[in-house]
Image (cartoon, rainbow, N blue to C red):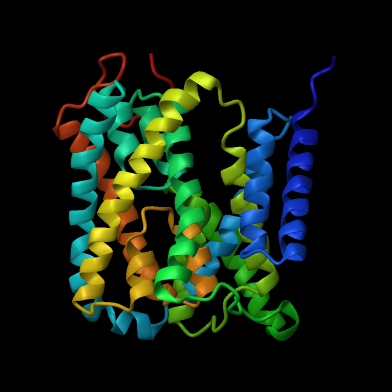
Length: 360
């Protein structure tokens, strides 16, 4: 039997995601454009159907979210930074506590090598942590599955927590439709998305597909050029491709990986969620932020996933994003430095200092 071409797998995956979105929307389930593709693609991956996440389209959708986040960073948000100082100060503490628990957990309980344990415990985005872990000599497959499991579960659980505990609604308007937005501003958004992405990649920025557009859109927003977020249709498309990527992240998973790697990821999600809850409760208790904002700001998921949920529930996107960006900065900059200072070694005995190129 001939191997199914990769392009056909990607097309089939997008179609499955679209079917899932339409099905969930028709039934009336919450967040249909996120959960529908996620569930359908997850089932397809576990059933070993020939699917493959369209990474390029996924990056374009992250461009959209980058612009949406950047457009939410207004002069008013910058003026409120001093008010956020107390809760922002808790972000590095939460990262340190998570690492102190996570590294021994992965190392001693599940027997991962030091590099894999180190980067598996870091609460950063999947792309960044897998990239750092690979360059430092870690187990790429294990890191991918552990972080995919963390993001998958947090994205599934967070909306339920928001609705049941904080009374949030998941049917808030996510933005104006394209027909109501100024054409000139949408053109500027498109240019910011592409230009920000390409510039960020040229200078080697991790998470370039979302951080580059975000920084450029933020500059345009602060300069009064952008006054709207991307149209609702673009946000829905971004939700769909995030769902597809999370579900398709389990393609090729084996029984052995389910028993060890995914199980480790599942248990660690409970641990890291407990840590995040403690910090979120601290923020809420001292009235440093409204409950849903504090919860989303410390939720241990990526900035893209939390941005989508923040938009859907009508949270203070600026507050949530500033906290996640602080954590992303600390993890991306601090994790390699800390692992080197602590002398963490990989499977081949190499020091865990990220490096370019192939390992010898």
